[in-house]
Image 1 (tube, rainbow, N blue to C red):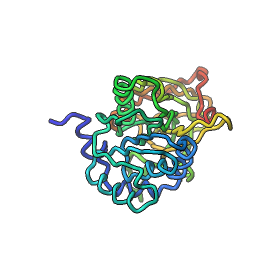
Image 2: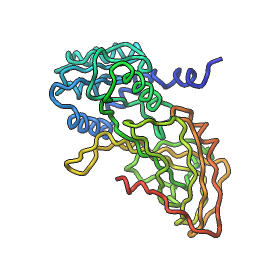
Image 3: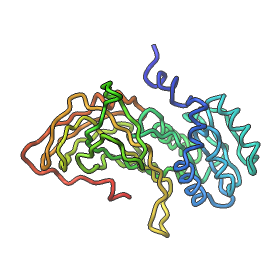
Image 4: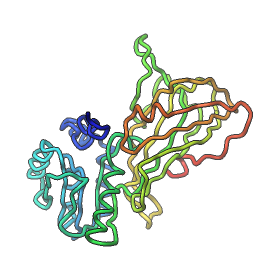
Length: 307
């Protein structure tokens, strides 16, 4: 009997199908953000490690300035793909593609920057948090401090109550939906402002358990039948410009098992808990939503405060 981690690895984990990686290459928002952040963070002569390299494109971005890049990939199909593609590009020879498990691999010498993009909305399904925490423990044990810079440096996660349309040509189906951040979704009503529920700073220790309980001030009348989850990845901090280079994942809308009616002025009490790297159903099953008819919502940290 496979455990949850083994089951997930069969269809996602470190064995994401090759065509998924090809789709990532076509995601201009993701590509441009990472290229900009890597160009800013990597300095001439730097040593760079990428954990979970896929096609090797992020390692290739780093190779433009770095002296040496190690690109670690566990999927043998992707190892072949990365080596083939890197050989077609200038500076590809500066990237060593290593067939190894990111949970176990350490570079032969200290590195300046670690790139790791095992990121799913809400830090679910993929193993970003576990991989980084494992790496930090093993790296410090072998090389001592300081730790390298991590990319992304931090992740800001927020939740937002929605009224979500679940009609598909007359077929009612309350399903998980992944939505473009720049497109207005038909039949969707944002019932309250998003609230930040977790901030992960990868330079600090992070627990894999993510749990939150908070309140929303309802702004529009409707039926809360879904929770939107927002994941903003802070790829690099640019202190001289007092800014950051960010990448925003697709929004994820999860259906709520027991929808509730709300009106403006209501206070919505929401709680959920899940394990970083865990399954979508585990989060979906934990969501609890209740309406406080009389009361004042406690101030919530809004995502716009971290924009």
